[in-house]
Length: 300
Image 1 (cartoon, rainbow, N blue to C red):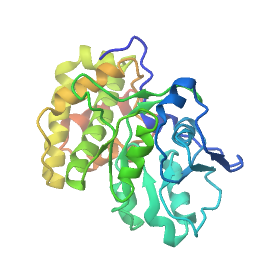
Image 2: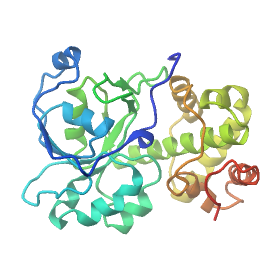
Image 3: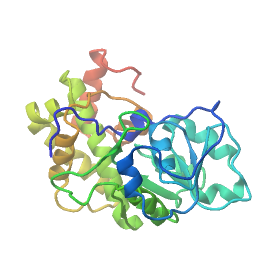
């Protein structure tokens, strides 16, 4: 499925929260009359950290309290705490969360979170691969459905996975509840997508991921195969058939998304740290970008 102007953006690019905002309680949808009609079920109560596009959307399903990233999490409540912020806010949010509520934290950021979560003792927490877009607060969301995955690509695993899926269902959005064994290869596929298309696009100075995928198809597929093999060896993961096709179909949906290497420590650094023997093409392209001054950071 292609759209002329892609608004299906990677969630990490537009997560945001405003710590100065007062707490807001959403009991019913105000997003549009169509969305009003779609909300037919009562969702479980949730706290949403982040009042940006995604946080506000999740609250629109109802029965939610929206918090700024500096707000206090109620230690006497229970239920999911949906973190709709950028990765760089996670450390403070976890540290400020009451110990008895940390099990309720739900992580939906882009990138490789395992190392961070393990350092906080939260590796078993609910995680979400979120494939949807909201172009502006209050605008009807676009789901992450592709020609290869008509069931949608969004997936959730863990304690609050079903509650999260129910919240999206109330907004007419799809979410697959999966176990950890199915989630991990899906998580790494998304990491491979963002690390490959953005990198090739940057190295070849493409205007979009769609251009990178169409004009440098062989290089893109070579890097994907390299990273799949590297992850399989490092993590002992078996990827389901069709990785290249799945990622290509997703690129068709987000074809106009700008190609840029960002949030290195959460994305490409995972592969960079595996070394040149495991990821020779990927690491060579990163160095090429650095030499050309195309990166906004220094390689380690």
